[in-house]
Image (cartoon, rainbow, N blue to C red; front, top):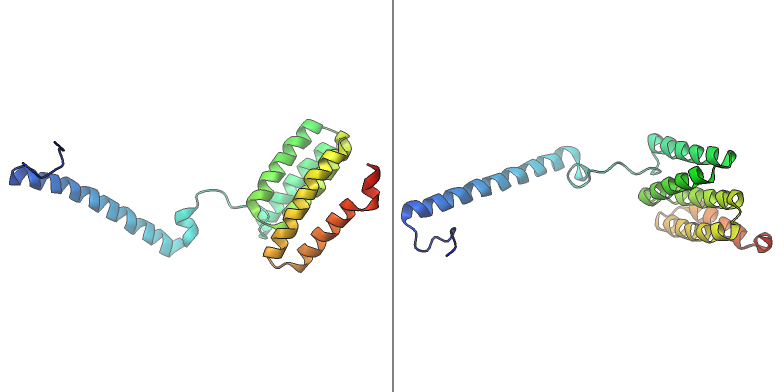
Amino acid sequence: MDPLSPIGKTATERAGIWHRFGHWASSLGLLACLCALMLAAFGRGAVTSFRAAPIGVGTPADESAWQAELAAFDAAIAIRDIARARTGLRVLRASADQSGFWKALVDLADAQLRLGRVAGVPGLSRDGARQNYALALRRAREQRSQEGVRVAKDALAALDGPSSAGD
């Protein structure tokens, strides 16, 4: 027999069951009220998102963080520290994916090409860069950015041009 079932219980026992249920219901109601208050006060992000803001979405703080990540990657490339550059590339990739911004993907593809040249695997890096340029083109179209469409198309054309056949 279900201990919460009111069947076969005395009136006092049934009242205790409903009393416990009432505490549960009021706790859920309190939580719902708290969420509604947060939603009203801080907007949708306060209730639904507890992760860091994406980098590269256009605010000065995001742009400076993105530039710092690019600078760290470029410093590793400058001293030919391939392991550190690969780690930096993973950080750049995660930030670019999280940002949803076309410019971050173009920067990521450019970084892939630089790493490929330094590491001696330009063909492999070109494949990854091509994918990121294509994704940047799609995002630019979604964001209705004429500059983004132009930059991504130009980068794809340069990548597939006659100069890349010799690599």
